[in-house]
Amino acid sequence: MAVSRRDREEILGSRLSGKVAIVTGGNRGIGRAIAERLAEEDATVVIGDLRDDHCAGPGAERLTFVSLDVTNEGSIRAFVDEVLERFGRIDILVNNAGLVLHKSIDDQTAEDWDRLMAVNLRGPFLMAKYVVPEMRRIGLGSIVNIGSVEGYMVNPWHTAYAATKAGVHGLTLGLAVDLGPDGIRCNTVCPGWIDTDLNRAYVEMHPDRRLIERELGQLHPVGRIGAPKEIANAVLWLASEESSFVSGEMISVDGARTKKIPLPSILDEEYRAKLAESRA
Ligand code: NDP
Image (cartoon, rainbow, N blue to C red; front, side, top):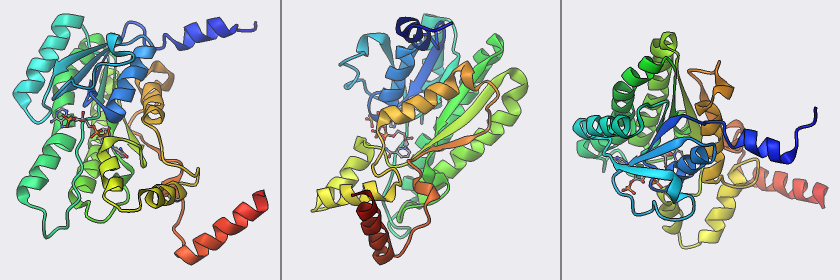
């Protein structure tokens, strides 16, 4: 039987009906796109973030903001209690809040290291710790972490950041193994270069911004950097029952950036020139 476009929209628009989802760091950037995407599929979405100044705007009426600092165990406990009190259950946890730091090992301090670990790695661990009892009660749950391609390979001056993201990948394996018997899955989406405030500032540091943007695009075999919504679509799949046999996976969403072995720039230019010629 043919499925009409309207039926299809209805089916696709209700993949998370009845589910309650938490998105940490959902005030802006990738987290905001995830929150909106899950809400589009009918989930009740609670954004946990330090501030809610970006929570206005299109789609905001479907999102609830509850204050959260993922570095503070008391704040996490209060946040989870409030979500349960207001919405009665938690089916999906998206650990997205994160910070990056560009510093050489000489300039990095122990405080820098601890701050990054507290937000990027200890935060997801504690969030899972306080959400899991509720997921166990319902007998089903999906935890989706936002890791990074920098859990596998590293930009210069990202020692601490890469260590936190590799840690998130390890946390994912551990949670998937320990919580599988409870019906709880855990996976990680590893974004490539996504257009958000987090790295826009990095691009803007350079005098020739357009050149940097072009070259960044060329690092990705698909020819461009990614958009927050493209990460949100992968999170949606992992959060939904469509991925019910997927757990313990790190899924790169990076336009194949991590699959291309870098060439010396002169050879890469020749390759690009020939490619452009063959397509002309
Ligand atoms: P943004 O900096 O745009 O957004 C991060 C959000 O996390 C902000 O809303 C921020 O709040 C919030 N946050 C920071 N600290 C805390 C805290 N202690 N408690 C609660 N919320 C907090 O980052 P992106 O959207 O770019 O990144 C989202 C995730 O994706 C991060 O984990 C990042 O590491 C990862 N990632 C991003 C990539 C990219 O290219 N953008 C690539 C690979 C991974 P506030 O605004 O108040 O600081």
